[in-house]
Image (cartoon, rainbow over all chains, first blue to last red; front, side):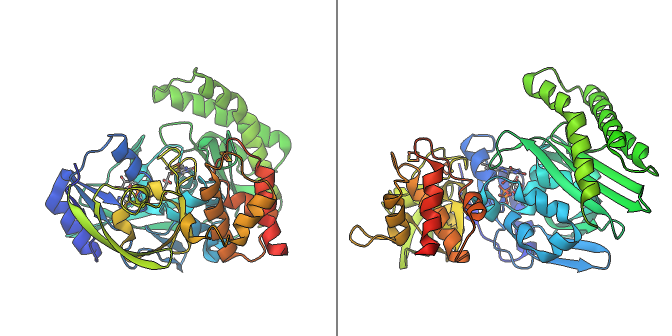
Length: 291
Length: 154
Ligand SMILES: Cc1cc2nc3c(=O)[nH]c(=O)nc-3n(C[C@H](O)[C@H](O)[C@H](O)COP(=O)(O)OP(=O)(O)OC[C@H]3O[C@@H](n4cnc5c(N)ncnc54)[C@H](O)[C@@H]3O)c2cc1C
Ligand code: FES
Ligand code: FES
């Protein structure tokens, strides 16, 4: 049973309260997950520590070649940000595909990342970039690569007395085209059956570099390195993109097997049948996009 | 359960009440404040029946801890219009027959109101986006969209 609801006014106080109450405390941001987990009996804290209105964690800005996003930036704020739209348009597209308007208004970037749902669209996009997270506690901070941070399905390496304060995205080379697409049962308020983030850098009608991050298929979003290698230094064409789609399927099947995931259930099997065509389609769309 | 004192503004009036630390805004609206126009469809953020406007933004009141609204301004369906003086949005819902059983309607209206507060002349696509988190199971989404669209042309 919850005995207290704490509303710290500084990051330090929040970290201190989380340390004081240890495993009995749960951090709350937008609360869209925490409320549900509490009501389903999945968590049973005696203390809630609310950081939603802490100052300074809702900043969106460029610092050199990095886009810095405060952890309390909401999904709606990501969509509205001209900086995000200009430098990481795929993140803007992914944010637009999250839940309904009400969830986007309330849910935060930090909440999405720490919840670490393999279907989370925001996490999927971030996986296509070199991206790190800043974690603070009362002693200081540590900076972790996103790949080290996410350790499994809804699992991260964050400690209970740490707060994710910031996300830093290293911008890809200038001129990169990017897009995000998701397959879902409905357009709105529906989680991904599968999603893909695609980045292409072209010079003289050749692909210099390709990045593909596949989400909602494996235990976490994965870079599809076999297809990335195939695409590099080639001339873009429908045939090439179809081959890349087949390689993504092969790699996803292998990874699924090594992760011990069942793929024969109905969602799994139709997901895999869709995959090659879906990948080819997203690659084509990205190619056709303006730089 | 520790009782918390909440001071906030609801439908333009300052209110102060005691709430439980694990209570949602929806529960407090319906139980302590007796504002039963805000409905509970699913209680897990899926249906939008509980939508209210919190500091100018549409949110699902079942997804917010009431302790988080201390110092905030909330608009619920009761603040939209009165029986003898409906909000133009409500009038338009009636005219366009955008209501059947009515269970989703207060949430639909609050999502639409939040949109109109930020965009004077929303496009049809913006209207569809704004109500995409509100499920209606017995009426017609087209009439709902038309009812909202009609507001800017009046
Ligand atoms: C009905 C519904 C539909 C949804 N649809 C989608 C969807 O389509 N796509 C999608 O990606 N997501 C979806 N979500 C998920 C959710 O809205 C997002 O993940 C959201 O951004 C979570 O943010 P929050 O601030 O509400 O998190 P909270 O509920 O506040 O927190 C989530 C978890 O993260 C921890 N946490 C939060 N912030 C921090 C921080 N700064 N530091 C450390 N720990 C922290 C909390 O302790 C908790 O464990 C949906 C959720 C619901 C309820
Ligand atoms: S009751 Fe809140 S979204 Fe359904
Ligand atoms: S009118 Fe019945 S659910 Fe919408």
